[in-house]
Amino acid sequence: MKFMKLGSKPDSFQTEENSIRYVATELATDIIVNVGDMKFYLHKFPLLSKSARLQNLVTIANGENSDEVDISDIPGGPSAFEICAKFCYGMTVTLNAYNVVAARCAAEYLGMHETIEKGNLIYKIDVFLSSSIFRSWKDSIIVLQTTRSFLPLSEELKVISHCIHAVATKACVDVSKVNWSYSYNRRKLPEENGNDPNLNGLRNRLVPSDWWVEDLCELEIGLYKRVLVTIQTKGMLSDEVIGEGLKAYAYRRLPGFSKGMIQCGDAAKYRSTVDTIVWLLPTERGSVSCSFLLKLLKAAIYVDLGDAIKGQLISRIGQQLEEASVNDLLIHAGEGENMMYDVDAVKKMVEEFLMRDQIAVMESEEDHGVQEMRKPGILSDASKLMVAKLIDGYLAEIAKDPNLPLLKFVELAEMVSGVSRPAHDALYRAVDMYLKEHPGITKSERKRICKLMDCKKLSVDACMHAVQNDRLPLRVVVQVLFFEQVRVAASSGSSTPDLPKSIRDLNNGSQRSSRSANTNTEGDWDVVATAEELKALKEEVASLRLANGRNGADKAVNNKMRGMLKSKIFTKLWSSKGEKGENSGSDSSESLASANMEEAKSTPSRNGRHSVS
Image (cartoon, rainbow, N blue to C red; front, side, top):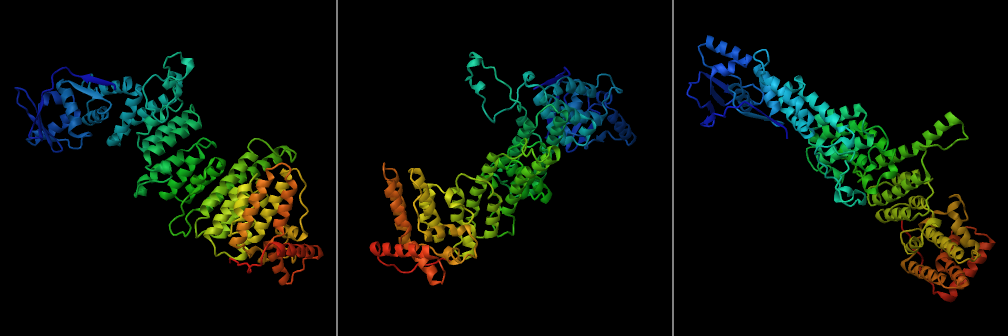
């Protein structure tokens, strides 16, 4: 830390009764200076020779036959005045980053200018500031922090503006020229550990581009904003580095921010901080991470910054939604809402994400015609897939909310339904979770939510789970078994077994109109397998996978699957359809007869199936 010593005489100020300060000398004091609760017994000559204000005050006091003057409003109080008084006496006084602003403001108050005496205190302090303080990185920050206590005088004296300029200029210096100390504890560089073989054993530390961000976190938000604006105006640092600075400040100044929440009951206390950080965000996409933006959104909601700020952040998040995680998207709903999470906010993010494709295509058509439909900036298939998987995981979390309406679940899922995923396991998990937490949904609702997933894209493990899942409609179980048989046959190198038409119709029913009399009744969707039937199906699928792993087992696999698909479950389903007066066609009737014969040989009759409404 830089410092400056003034004067050469020993310090002879002494204290009496904690409220009196006096100079120990043989000469009697002839003036009393009141500064708040403290009385200073001093001598007129050294004070008046350097202070224009004291000259005027003493003149007035003499006219009133008084030897006391009051300067209780002096900036810095008794301690600042004592520095000025010691300077007048020529006593040793030390100025540093912590007291120089107080001394400068007190000297200004006392009128200690060059017009009163050459080499006065104001001149010496200004020289110290310009030649030492403003050239030191940490001293400049310390001085800038102390200026808050002396507003508006510190602003009028341009101490604040000079400090801001000094700090911003150093922050923008090329890292190769940074040769001063700074705080940097957020991560340890390999070079600092001596792990770089190119250093030949020398600890030549490389200065990171964001070396300055932690030290600036010491500033209160108003001064921090002014420094950041000055840095941005210089245009020497990238938006990514500015973003790192904002991230570090938020983590330091907002308790609990790293966990996606502000752990403090006084929301108004942090409203200005959150608002300023949002205002300072660089406009370039990707300058800050999506995770940081989502945490900032949660903070903005907590401190109630309003819909405009919330909408601005949602728009920014949507521009880089593929970077988000499920936990980041779990934004708690506002007060008075029945739901646990703010699903509408996530829908808007997805809309903003998908809008990037539409805007890019429109620009392409305007600039280059319809032939060129892709150019930099249009969403890649990988980005779309990442968002689709993200939403699948998010749906599984919000499905646990018993108050989540089916419509919100379905609408969000359908927003990414056009994105082709190699597997629908995550979506199946979300659908299953919703069925588990909402057992009372209607037939049509169950049908609608199950249609979100494609049974052809379920993994073997998901198929095994679906077969024994008593929450799924029987039609879905049939589809799972059908496509599992096709996959087994394909993987074993054989052709797909020739299924009975009734089973093919049952599987294909989900692809036809809901008004089809042959295959797609509400009853099909509402039928749920019994526990015993699901257990049997599980055993069949397990043995099927085991048989597939043996050489020359293709025929056995196909026969086993064919027999399973002709089992009692499907016979009962189609029998129930016949009882309802549906016409399945001649091929279907033959298949049903064959299935009934198989059932009679292998399985005793069972009571009718139960339904879950």
